[in-house]
Image (cartoon, rainbow, N blue to C red):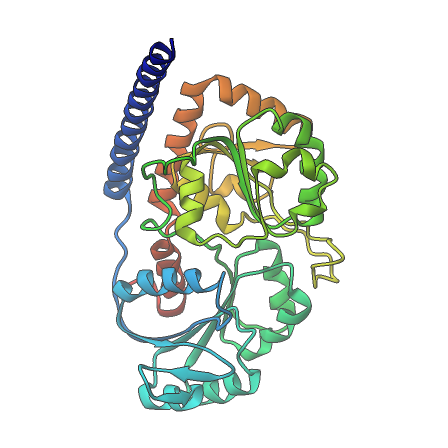
Length: 382
């Protein structure tokens, strides 16, 4: 009898494994066809005959992968790229160290781009700018730190912000050139890939448990407890219903991009939920500037070819068509209804995900964003 049960279990395991492998293979084949079409349809980026000094944030993880994505995307767009690893105004090139002013004086780049800027002295920026080097900063956390970043405006020739509602602030504060430039995704990191063993889920969410997310997931908990889910991030123990979801929460973990992409690929649905602009505990946004622009996770999720359910952001429609390339929700009840619908309606879920993948791969790479930045600074002709 035991042998019969063992044989039956073996056959069932082989059948399930075959089906999983087959569907995963079909999905990857469909995604690759979409990716190749998007690449063919993409407008080629020009090359600028300029020397650029790119200064990293110096803040380590989770900014470090963003620095790497920008460097890899920027290098093919310019004649020469110099990398400055910012750490309290110190720059390391190979083994020797030199301060940022020395580096700028030696290479005299046509443009210095600084990411985030929290670790760069504004006096240093002023002195470099006074030598005739154009300076630009790309702000990564608007509107959440505008109490600090508002003071940057008079120190840079160009300010690029990922939040459309912050453009007017920096103009009012005195920056002559302020432009809206959202973040993006790096195709070699966030892309369709085979589902890692044990990572297949119905629903996933990756991110820190800010209070607006805690409130939402506490209301979702009874529904999610009956699904195969994966939640990863810091502070999730503050959920009122933490014990209900705890077996499916990876607590107090910062996932690397490759791990995050694996989790996205393993999910049928990925939830995206932006931070609250008025969180009193974690924000430095006393002006209470509303967040309207999509976060980088928006592009990273869709770049993996999975269905994304995201909260509504006013500027989202300029990047994706809702209910065609991405799906939005307005309340916990709306989210539950849509999760249940798309878990059942598999073909609709896949088609929306594929259309989102196409739009992301065609329009929302870091190479596209940096090409826009260089066109603003140097003109359209590369």
